Length: 135
Image (cartoon, rainbow, N blue to C red):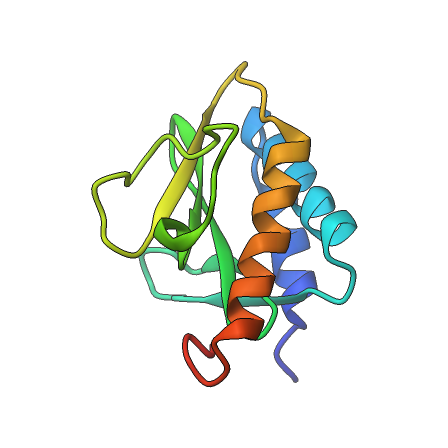
């Protein structure tokens, strides 16, 4: 039996969440695909303590990951520290030299246009630095 496709694994992860986090992860996924048609989905870091792994969206390298915790969904941008964020969407991992993240807690709204702009900027940055950050 073959391994399920990454999209199927992400579908299963979303379906397996029985609370608000399912809707948040599904919405973020849709926003990414809308902002960047042709984005590639992957699932990385599967292990016994996290058998469903971490959804990853790539375009010339990793754009962002979608980790699910008990009280929030974390969207970590691999090169977030190098991205302009005029809307101030990044709210976590701000002290890091490379990554930046967005933590979304129950009831919080995501600035969808600003998020999609970050996705497009991340793809442009990956394209501008060929061979670096390849997934």
